[in-house]
Picture 1 (cartoon, rainbow, N blue to C red):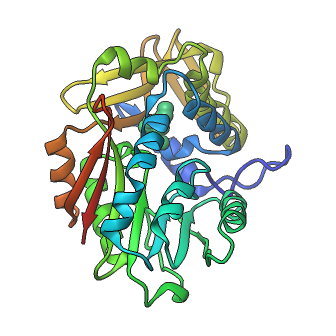
Picture 2: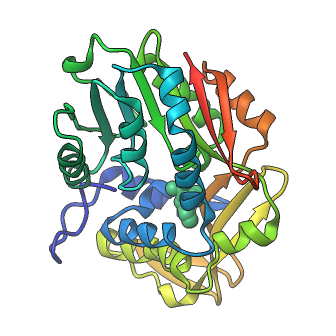
Length: 318
Ligand code: AVI
């Protein structure tokens, strides 16, 4: 979620990084735009809808798993830590961890100030007496933690398999950065989605109600709104495919006919069948997950999965 959202119909200045990623991504071969740009206000709403879809198993599977293992996480981490969540906090998952962990403070980190303040207020009400220190920051850049938690050991919380939206090298960089921010004696509880049968994976990213398609296509609407684009969104279709070599779901926007359009005054043409690659969602086997975490400087000390082995929560030590 980004600050440069359209507020009540009034366009704010486009983020220069958005402009650069879109113009470079459309000029590149293969064409690709980073998934982080999905999350304007509409995109964030659509993502919330996705998490409640019958086909989208990750959110409800991870939530149920967390409910069943939160006590054990708390016992291993011990009380009195600062829980540092990467992302503004999920209404469903965060209270489960905070309720079990008896933390001394809670630090949610998110790029969207509005979303962050809203969820921080709700959690402060649900946990009266728990100091909540929201940090408005993009955790893909260095994140200074508040002085108020400087003396506390940290428990990082990175649910949702958001790590899966990064390529391995970016994931390792982020894990290493988290280790540095969280400091000596830190622990990390991370959610990682498992490799599983395609008849489960594909519908999760191409649901019958078309919500994921709308989420993907919203990127084109956002480009048109914020960058003065003329992309005919109705000439594109959502595609979700499994890339077996890379063990990931890929989302693409496929041109259904030859199209020509401009973005920020720059002309582009795409032939029917060409795609813009918009997201990777990596899935991990147990060994791949542990290897990634170790490469990121973390030692897995406990791991839990649901009965179908669809989703893993992994607790690590720095
Ligand atoms: C945020 N992220 C973990 C989601 C995922 O499953 O990769 C984003 C998403 N894309 C389509 N559906 C959900």
